[in-house]
Length: 420
Ligand SMILES: CC(=O)N[C@H]1[C@@H](OP(=O)(O)OP(=O)(O)OC[C@H]2O[C@@H](n3ccc(=O)[nH]c3=O)[C@H](O)[C@@H]2O)O[C@H](CO)[C@@H](O)[C@@H]1O
Ligand SMILES: C=C(OP(=O)(O)O)C(=O)O
Image: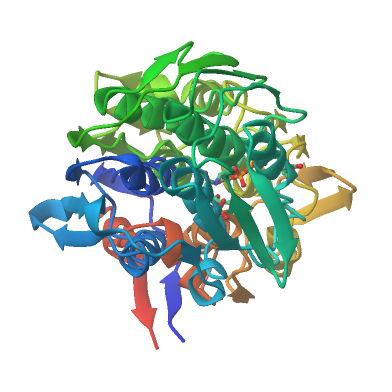
């Protein structure tokens, strides 16, 4: 199993090109199932989750061609299978996004219940309930969600989401594009990845109003066409590199990104003492050799501070001047990086969904275990600033969501390499 070996102590400096967004690429790849023609996607990141999604689309019968520079061409006309099997779904929760398109386009679909996940229970009741309101008959048995639409076509419905759910909104949005009549999704997620998906669907011919707001109004159409679509930059990868720059007291410019997607994160980095400059598609962070100041963080749905940046800010606070509180409001078990950071010398007390982090002068390198995607990223950042060597085990989590992470950090001057 691969591990990352990091010798800490270098201030990061230079430019890093940000990849396409994992959490936009995945729903957009699944949305190709809705089309009647070839969909060509660009800026698709080279990640394990993307490979899994492509394998899943292929298993359903789609014809997939990989081009240069991570261009993916999906021809969904050959789809003849409607079951997303456990062996593929278990590695990636986003597989649930096959359900809405299958049911909308083919009138039936079966998706294995995504397996247990490290950061919380993550039920899919909102996905199921929304599809039921649109007329699908759904049973959950033998570990599968089995959906069938009497008459073959979903009907428009009024759906009030109990909780803001990103993939829940995406699944129902995709389903509604081909339903008969109007669907209204209230309390919809406003995350940029939902917006990117909606824009792709609109380019395919979908009729969607309220994009980027908490009320989506979708008038179903008979068919969606093929399209050429470029996936937006990854705001979480961007934020991860910016925090790494801040923690190592360096100066890094993220290119090929979009500062407008990271407002809450940039505000917190400035509060921590970083000098942040932005252009249309770049962000430069300069710590000017100074130690960051501790910043309080509360995670919440977009446009508030993202849960996917919480672990990285835990590390920032762990080496900052002062103490700060981190409150996680989205997932009930998203502090698994804390015991590992404590083994590296961090001073963090946990109380339910609150962490009190008291900054220490230095962390010390240790063997640590990656437990989930962003927790893993936080351990890498900790390794970059710690004294001595850090060995991060179980980095298959990182490979789900960060493209060539060791190459990108190496180019910024980090001493990091992949070992077997
Ligand atoms: C592939 C993808 O895009 N993953 C992102 C997505 O995950 P994901 O879409 O799984 O997260 P959700 O937005 O659905 O989860 C938000 C909260 O709603 C709860 N919930 C969700 C659905 C449901 O049917 N019932 C229910 O109770 C969840 O347990 C959680 O407490 O949004 C999260 C929140 O921004 C991010 O951390 C993930 O990186
Ligand atoms: C939690 C994440 O992903 P997933 O929803 O795919 O587990 C993430 O991207 O941080």
